Image (cartoon, rainbow, N blue to C red; front, side, top):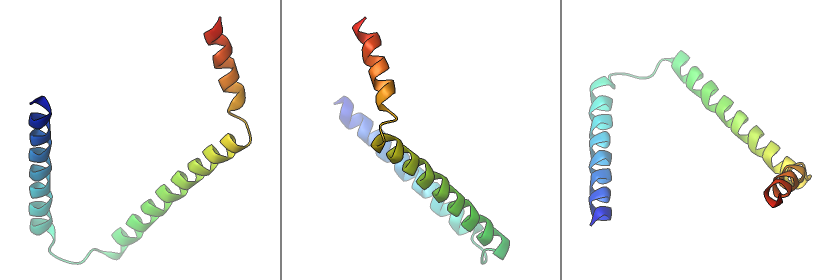
Length: 81
């Protein structure tokens, strides 16, 4: 019963937020987006992708080259004490 109430509440929030987004979009969407905003949006998305891909590459590099192994051994040694 709790799960059904939780799911109903979450769907209610989803519907309310969707209504808010659509109504705001309709009221504010009067014309095309200016060029400087398109450039700013593209720069923000590009920077976010660059940072995200770079951090994931560092994570995979660290994992594949064994840099995480030393930290794991130290934790196991402390747990056994």
